[in-house]
Length: 423
Image 1 (tube, rainbow, N blue to C red):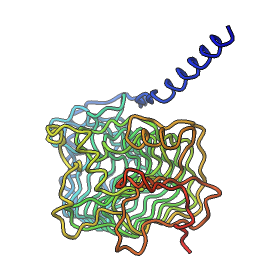
Image 2: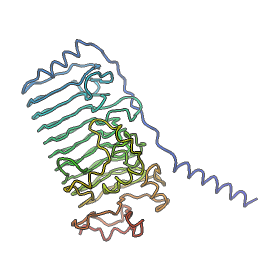
Image 3: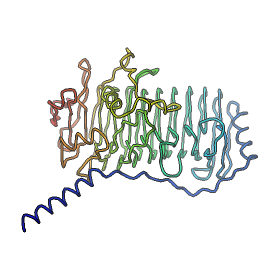
Image 4: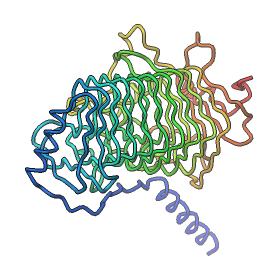
């Protein structure tokens, strides 16, 4: 009888563990109260302000929640301010968009400021800014309403090929790629924002001189991403990530098939991919199921992407979404390995016993580190000519580390941080 009871208890415990391991986080829903006005006269007035804007124009948007049927363009102007009456007070809704793919589309500008408004539900990117020197977003919400879906637009904030970018006190919600994204840009500040319900909360891609601080990043698939991808105009360096609160980034990945962020493991606080000179310090990472900070090479992500995706999937990706491809083999200037990644003092907490196993990293950790959580996870692939790949400013007393050594089938996997001391 005792033997039977023991077996039943063992079976019950096993079933509970299996449930916890296989359980996926539900897709979140964003449902703010809205009462849209579909007034063609108001829409035409707003569109005319954008089309007729000259240098030093202030575009003042009215209070209210307005349905807009076409992209609002601004091209070739300087010192222009676009302002409303506050998040939720001035709302531009592009759900019924029939012309263009973006909400706001700003090109070839200088010193543009967008403030105090909400932009939502564009077919593609909510706010896209290109080739602009001096772009400031302040107190702007950019979001998709309803249950998050791969049908949502890719980017909430999307400045690319820009200089002197400031994104401050903003909100990004529901992006199927990255909420707050900065690509191929120089001199960037991403501060005091809130990013939730996105695949990637915040992403710096191929950008130089970037400071990411004071942000609250939660309930995304991955919290803060620092990427370098091949085949682009420049490669990133000098990225500092500090004083951020990054927690519960466990949402199942809902990226469009073929997108590179589709390889971001659910449960990742931060992911560094194939870039150099990144410094993490004084951040708080809490309850990110897979790992707090992951460091990986593009080579590994490419191989995982090939294995996990069907060849016909990539053509489904549209617009500016970055796809997985083998350009890293033909781009002579691209280095797919992370270099000079420095981890300072951060706070790590995790109440979960098991990683999410809907991704390869989670499966590896479940079998290699059962009943443990890993704060800093590295794939073990490195450039042997680099000064160093990874270093820690402190010992391993306050965090856990695991270097996978994937190239040798985990033969030399290690949890010893002593050989990676910054000193």
